Length: 428
Image (cartoon, rainbow, N blue to C red; front, side, top):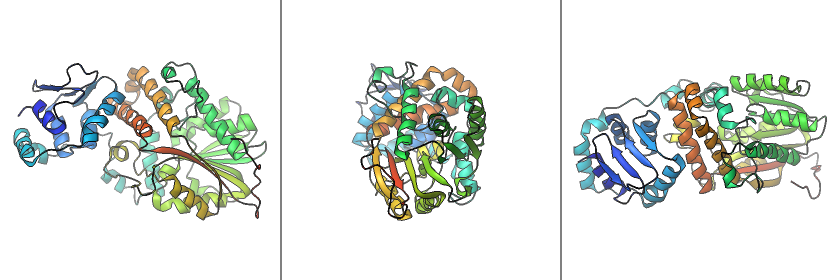
């Protein structure tokens, strides 16, 4: 049985993409705008040993499986066809496939590509979400290369969901380099600032601050004394230089440190933009209790994080592509679970907002940036890492569009006695 026949047995004869293989066989729609090409027998090893998204990712990232055409379109086709209908292989077909491929393919383990964070590598760093292991997980993803992130994220160097208006969010503006993404990122920081009610002289703590975008925005636009903390050494170094270049050193600072080491009780406002995903489900209560302790009475917390659409979904898949290649130890909770943890820590919830569609748009812009700068990106981080990002961002667009994941901002207040010090009808 040739590989094209195996492909048809697994996904059916009407797959809306072209399939070709090194053995000369082909299947699928010959006129499709996307194609999968199995380049080497090693790809078959990966797929035989992990006949799911992980196997496909290993084969693609390592270059043994090639994709022609747009990655998002390919993933959408697979989601609409193979994944939607489910893979239904009879016992007889499975026996024939094993016989054709050869049992050696199933037992002769091939090492995953170096871009994969294996469980063994993480285990050497201690228990999940210990300080040492969290530092390693952050290093894996965020210390790739500041130059690479500049190519993907654009001038704002903001690696969190932007907020679009109808003009900036027009589909035909994706990839045009006309400032739509930068405008939307500024709008996000302005939205966070309004929800927090930033005023000159306030002290802001931004936990998981990335390259300091919120810190600099708060200092420049609102005269706030802002401290950002990050576990990424490269982020902290980049942010420190940028703060100095913008003349904000008297108000803004970014430190390479764990948020757990920030002293308590001295901040008027806290922003947590994209950090909760790295905290861990079992640590949410302690996390929000820690942030509560760092605020003065009357202080506010704005928590901005990726969420699950329901509270009863698993927070993580240790064998999944995202956990192995993108966010090791990353865990996502439902918005209700996060809000409950904030409540239980003492916060009074004042506002909640879902920005799911905005993140899909943000990711489209990042993906377009990567494709436009593909050769430079490969030169900076290698083709394997660039392929991880191409696959991960296209898949994430699909995830936000189809409500597999969401993005919530939740605003909480540490009451001053019984006073929230909020306007009766705040305008966000």
